[in-house]
Length: 139
Image (cartoon, rainbow, N blue to C red; front, top):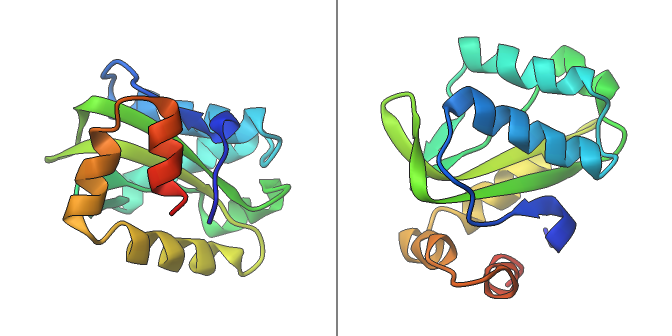
């Protein structure tokens, strides 16, 4: 899955978990991938499910019934070089997911494979600039 600059907020100051999820949602909204109600569903999902997947990555996404608010499938990436507290973990990349129809699982699988390599994730987190980050992510 390729991403563009419009989908990434790079080198952000650390914020709360809730603020990070809202920001991931705002980027999805800005890219016309979702309707605003989807962001509330992302926050709601966090109350019942853990979206931290390891390696310093969390993948907040909406509840199943919120798929009706997804206009087009895609992701947003928020980069926190100093990390944020995400429950008991520290997250450096928050990847907001908007998956319509059956795209949701495909996006999750694609990300899981890509982000399971600790060295790869470390290189992403330590990227010096947006262009380098995009180059690494889009490999």
